Length: 297
Ligand SMILES: [Zn+2]
Picture 1 (cartoon, rainbow, N blue to C red):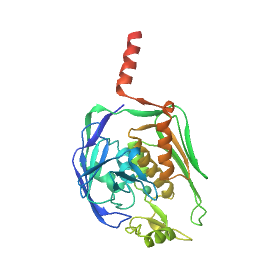
Picture 2: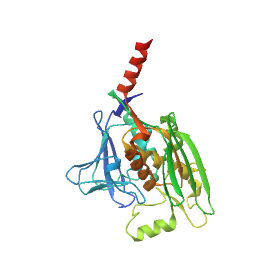
Picture 3: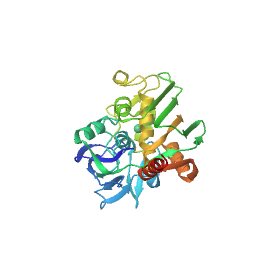
Picture 4: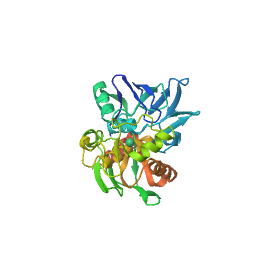
């Protein structure tokens, strides 16, 4: 059991939104305990959008949250960086509709958080512990969560592409593994999809600076790959971000096969609807258990 965390100092970041192509100013600010992650659209009358599964409004190509008709898109890499570094409470001010894509990974966000410093708060964090397996599927894609002592993700992706077929990775998610194994892994996309999206007015900010592009035969920016299996690492990064929308750290093993944002959110909704499959482990419960044990000695 650990204490809740926020930032020591504000973080100011300016960068392009991958879908709108707009330059966006983002300011991540410390927040008091039990706040969670709250986005604030400063260009839309300071509308607050709390990061949780209830505000998810779209999962096509990225995870979008909405409140009172106001959106914030591409939240998953920032949510992953916050969850990966155990930051529970922050306000994220944005003067546009997207979190900046930066280099397509969570590394610049992790570096900025480390520079700011992490402040421990006066209250301990509660965790959501999985008691029974829960699974969702869609065609050949599926994702499940099973009981596990800690947080683990095992992910398999598969494409019929000459440059790569299957990539599989299993990893216990800790601050250290998140920083070293996941944070640097960048977004990837098929060049033909990026061109199609651009023609529809989407992916306006996508470039070889922020996306690993797959041509029909090979990876276009192949020499710059940060890991041989950068794709599956990025999928795990996305899962860490999306699954944090349940609002508490999860103790469980996530096992995914060709999953994505849509299935991640479906899994969270199914979990929340099946109350007997998990329990909230709060510091108070643990304290009373220890007190009971102590009384029996
Ligand atoms: Zn991503």
